[in-house]
Length: 526
Image (tube, rainbow, N blue to C red; front, side):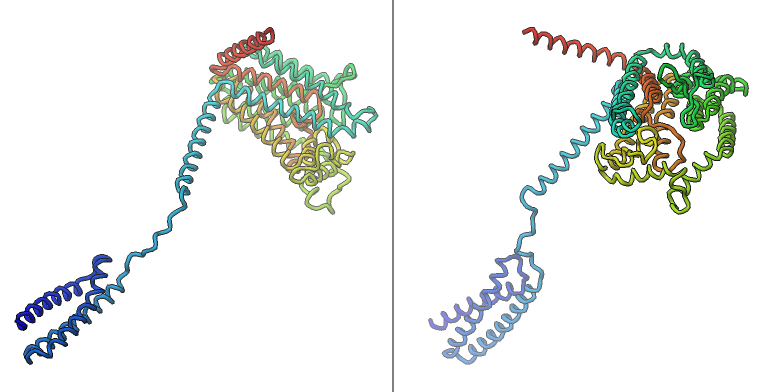
């Protein structure tokens, strides 16, 4: 019985040893397999010790068999250890969880991006719908002009207060009161002109150019013509002075628009192209230059060139006129020592102070730069300019942009430039959206008249151009300038009201206004 029991036990041990060696030779598949592999060698050692203890009571054959088994078990154990060590070298997945974003971070960033995209899409849609509205151009131009006029009144009061009081007027508001009156007259004319239809401007085009040339010719009549600081383009009567060249520019732009629209597609010969366009432009520019005002003459020629370009003037004749005009301007510049000195002051008056006469020709330009430089980013404060204390000549007129830079800083000057840019964009919209060639040509002329003149004035103040003597539209002091500029804007506004769908939009707005006033009236009665 004892031998049978021992045989059965040996059989069980063989099976266990076979299972143990098989599991040890197989690579670990999971954590559980690794744990079984780690625990089974210990069991094998115990079995080997037990078999060795019991083999003492068995025959020598059994001992040899047990010894062989023990040796096999030891080798199996070493193999298991090697397998376990090899399995330990295999990269196991890290037990530490991967770093995850904080709760809500990913979702919040996605939500933020989606919100920004939705807001941008809505903004683009609003801008597109606003741009497509037929009255957008009208209100763009109107708002810009009102802003510039209001800013001009404030800056005229600030820049002229010292000069006005010191000049014997006894009040710091003398120039401001006149400018406010001129602005009021100009706004009334702008409102009336904006209500006129396109047919009205076609009918008065010839009348306007004849009246403008006649008024400009009156400056040479003794007793009527007045000269101010070498400029003889003034008419004086009843204590007032008018500069007819400002109104001549408006009339010329309107007349060129009418003539080029009538001649569209017909300017095939030299005579047909030149007459009556070239004689009209030469008469206007010639009368102005004869009054010793080359700056205004240059503006007239530049405005005429823009109108001819937009109006489809033949290219070969257009280039011929440009060449002749450049030769004439060069002659007038080279024949005047005063104009040459201004150009020299522009080139050397700021770069080398030792070589420049700061008390002479370069005085005004240099002090304009000093005024801009002292303003810094935000300016010294409204009304706190130091250059206006008789240091900067024409501080309230041609060089008022320098006072803006001194009192309102770089930010103030950039705002003024931005408003002029938006105004120019509104005029370009009129040109692009109109189907009438007269409207396109005349509006292009007014663009050169207002925005182009503003660019020249800013270039003069900043030292990029020689001193010419042109005011900043709507901002500089001057009755003729602001009235003529507002009248020109009134004509452009009338063109803007003629855009497709504008009349219907105006009628709808009138109906809404009437209904709103009716509701307010009922509430007051109650």
